[in-house]
Each structure stands twice: as structure tokens, then as C-alpha cells.
Image (cartoon, one colour):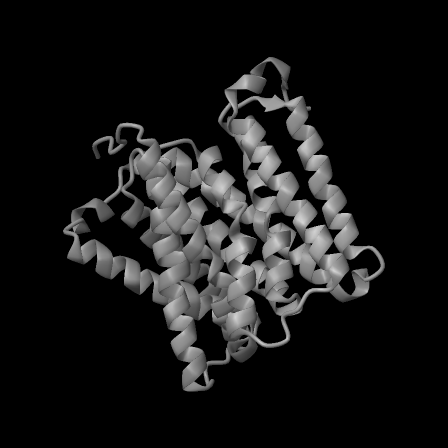
Length: 306
């Protein structure tokens, strides 16, 4: 397998990352509808299975079928990518089932922070002291959002944070492998392996539920293309043109797209003032974190992670 990395291009990196951010924001809307019908476990299985079909069709149509044969050194990381995707699905959509979509989008902004922290460990990136302040701001926002109503939003918030960790690991693996594996192929194996993991989980330990209204099927199948297929294809393509941290910067803006979509397409998705202020604080801290991380002017204050 030849190295498929491309020349850095800020415009292309920005375009692919922004498009990915918009599409991945739809997960909070289509996922909310799908989970209400299927339940989190069956929905995750249907979601990634459909996405695998879409990804395979894209590979066939673009003439990349031969690239499905991966070099031996890539298989372990690709399998890990799929396994962590399978873990993420019931966590993320279990949390979404318990939270309203806009608030879940704000809580999900911990994912870029976790991605950067993982990058300091595995990609030898440096963590600046000022970035630790931004992380503290995010934690403060999380506390503001949940203090006094932990019994209502606590479990959903915890599941979402665990899903964020799993997602960060996926982005890290994707960044490490987009030079050797084409994004279309990486997306296919990500969701195909996850489908196998979720099939074992759903049929072996949970109650599968496939008898739902046609509207639920339609929204789920549409969302499966926009979310786990198209958005991750664009995300992995952006990694070929600029740093993962720059893509994470744009990913912090997901609530700005998810919130109006929720108000338009979903009912009863209003946030309380406490959730709104806490969510905005989380997003501000996340944006500051990734901004400081990619800003070369702050390198003199960097420190190794403890």
C-alpha cells in the first residue's frame, strides 16, 4: 500500500472540516428520532450497518475496491477503530436518549479537549499551561450545567462524556492511519467492524427492536449517510490537509448547528437557562483550548502532561 498523504492545504482542510462539522451536527437530530423508535442499542446497529452499506457503495463507485486489502501493519489499528466505534454508539445514543439534543451537543464539546489531551500522549504534541486554564473553564461549565439537577441529567451527561472519550480515540486512530489507508476505506471498516460488535451486543445481551414506523426508518437511514458515513469521510479527508487540532477547532462549533436544527425539527428540546449558560461556557472553553493549541505564539509556555 502506497502512502496516500497529500500536500498540506489550509483551504481544503478548512472546507472538509467545516462540512464534516455541519453533517455530524445532524446526528443529534436524526439520532434523537431514531433512538425514540428503535432504542439506543438497536438504533446503533441499524445506524452503522446502513453506513457500512453506503461506504461500500462509495468505494465501489470510486473504483477503490482493491484498497480494501490492507497491509498487515494497518489491520490492528483499523480493528481498534471499529471496536471503539461499537463501544461509542450505545454510550452516545444512550446519553442522547436521556438529554435534549442541544444540551447533548454542548456536553459533546468535551470531545475536542479529550482529543488534544490524547494527542499530547500519543502524538507527542505539547500541552500549554494556558490550555489547562481552558480545560478548567470547560469543567466549570459542566458543573454549572449539572449542579442541582444531577439526578435529571447526570446519567446522560456521564454516558455522553464516555462516548466523547471513545470518539477521541477514534479521531486519534484516524489521524494516524489516513496516510496509509484512504478515508473511504477507513470509514467502511470503522462502521462495518462496529456493526459486528453491536450485532453481538444487541442479539446476545439486549432485546432487538426492528418493528418501527416507516418515518423512523427513513430518518435513521438518512442520518446514517449524513453522520457516520459522509461526516467521517470528510473528517478523515481533512486530516490529510492540515492538523487534527485544527479540525477539532471547527468541531467545537457543532452546537451552533445542532441547536437551531433541534428547534426546527424536534419538539420539546428547549434548554433551561442553567443548561444554556453551562453549555455556552463549555463551548467557549473548548474553542479557547483548541485555539491556543494551534496558535504558535504560545509555544513558550508549553509543558509536558502530568
